[in-house]
Image: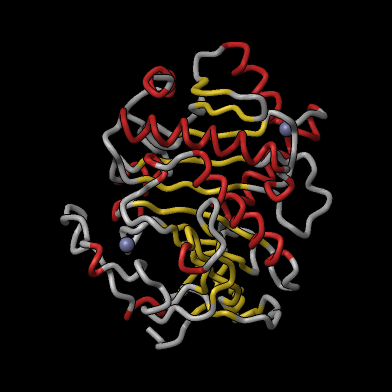
Length: 333
Ligand SMILES: [Zn+2]
Ligand SMILES: [Zn+2]
């Protein structure tokens, strides 16, 4: 592979974008293999990010009652091993023979939490609120970048979820294309809206709240449920009860309710599934598209308890070995 090849390529048939990036060949991996023993703190690159030469701190938030950097609880840094190239220059989509591509430029930030072994399942509400505060501050800052088409906030925990460092950290990607999964989700919401003049997620939430079969948790502003057609076993989604297309519009009160919903969900996943690896991410309307008001932002949480086989990869049909109804029953406790 070309040494510096970083580009988004469009599949000619499906129209889906993929990222071809050769940048990670030198990235150190701090898990030996998926069943490796926990990395000792002394070898962790996120214990003292400044010592590990991660560069400029884009944002930091202290522990409650503290205001000095020594007492940071969270810091946001540029990812030292990005899969995309940090670049403010806007690039068009180029034609190359019959194919299309655009340079893999954008921004990739790391949100590092202070405590080495304190994953979401063990965090308190106040800690999760700080993380949500950082997500929204950075989201608003990245929205100002002219070439950013989508901002994806995600969190990988554990080697099965694709994390290379076991220390709790989230990532924020600001990229020049709309990811295929988000695209499909947006198109599905538009189609439903055009047919029914209502938001598909609001309709689904109304039904689920009435039936209660797949509801896991509710508070004043948020509902957590196991989706009817879950993509993986034990999948959970958290939705704002009030229709809102954009995650970045959450106010302080909603942020507090979201933190409590996340605390409840992650602590139950930790307890009932015995601390599994997991991914979560936020799906929200693209920052530039003001006409996407029929979208309904949400958080998807995917515990990684299964490995994909041929049916998943060959047919895109995921085999979910526990029903969403059973998942909800288990995670209500
Ligand atoms: Zn650490
Ligand atoms: Zn809605």
